Image 1 (cartoon, one colour):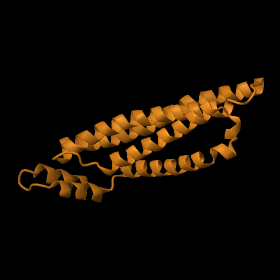
Image 2 (cartoon, one colour):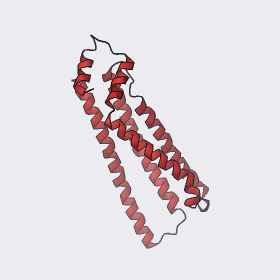
Image 3 (cartoon, rainbow, N blue to C red):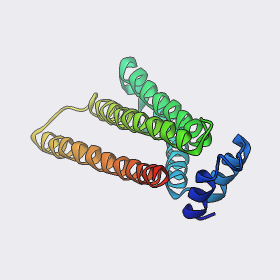
Image 4 (tube, helix red, strand yellow):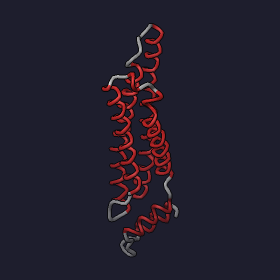
Length: 181
């Protein structure tokens, strides 16, 4: 169903009432590209982090690291996995109001909050991964240069992740503004 048809149905809501089920059906028919992108990202991340968690101790010499770094690494990965599960719940339940406009407004707020949490968990995970891997090495000049280079990459990754979420929020906000007209 095209956006114009959706707007028309919304404007005629007083004449023909749409049930919550009808609204869910309309949104599911549209199969929003933003939601699809987020679902794909979350699924890939969840699988890769779960694999990492299953093999890190043997593959990356977890027995040589301090228990604190092992704990922090596991906590960071579990935090990301929980974050991804919450993301699936937010995406899986876009209907949270009596009207399309109300649902979209609440959904936009949820996405904005989720974006902040997403960026924060990535920063935490990156720092824990970096700490885990450098915790048992002796730092030489060459390794310090490499570490400095990696430290410069982290803000770039954060910036790129911020841009991805900003684009997603803009697309949802644009739809909200169009429906509001």
